Length: 80
Picture 1: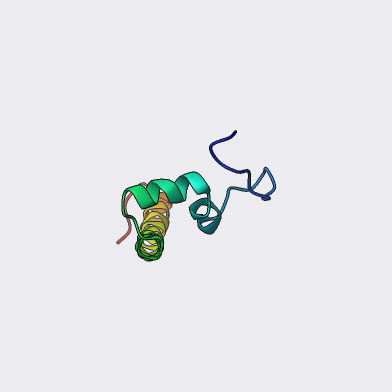
Picture 2: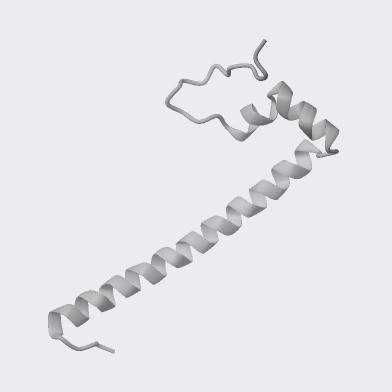
């Protein structure tokens, strides 16, 4: 008997958070560790938002850095 049931998701797609949290082995571990699914979902949602915010800031920084690098390469000196 497998430790988890195979989800109906196609093999080229990773399971969603809801699919993972509905797996019997996951729910058993969460019960044993007194993890509440709704609290975990809320915490992971907050982390996801924080990562998106950080990623957007990082992308903007990288774009500025690439533009400055291109300007330096083209002129041989840094533009301000």
